[in-house]
Image 1 (cartoon, rainbow, N blue to C red):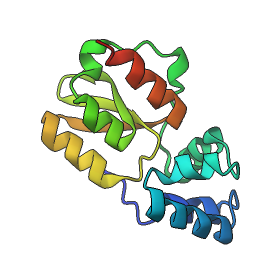
Image 2: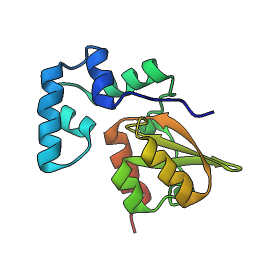
Image 3: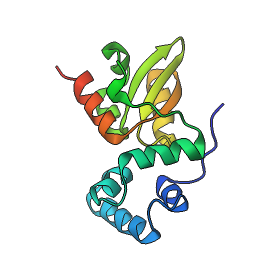
Image 4: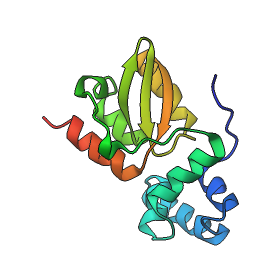
Amino acid sequence: MRKIISKQLGELLVDCKLITSLQLEEALVLQKDKGGLLGHILVSMKVIQEEEIAQALTAQYGFPYLPLASYEIDSQVAKIIPEHVAKQYGLIAVDRVGSILTVAMSNPLNTQAIEDIEMITHYKVQVFVTTSSDVTNAIKSMYKA
């Protein structure tokens, strides 16, 4: 069963009092100017830590948290998702059981990413939350030549 998510990441972080509305506005301006993921921008602004974002998502929506640094990912499973798609959405496939593909992502509120992964892979996606750094490191490790 898919969770119904009506809030964007920025709204959630403001509601949880992890960032201020002003900090969110600043980050959104930077995002509009330079592109990139909101979570990355907020971390680079040093207004929040990646783990705080992951914990907020876990607490608010019940997504399980998966620290990838201590998780062994099968490279064949990771490569079910093309590298450019993994980088674009900040996610990585970590496991597959039958028709269910388990994906770790830094922004599980991105329902478009989940829908795209399901369309590309023809698997049902199960989502875990992790940090952007963990995803970036896993992508570098899994997709190296």
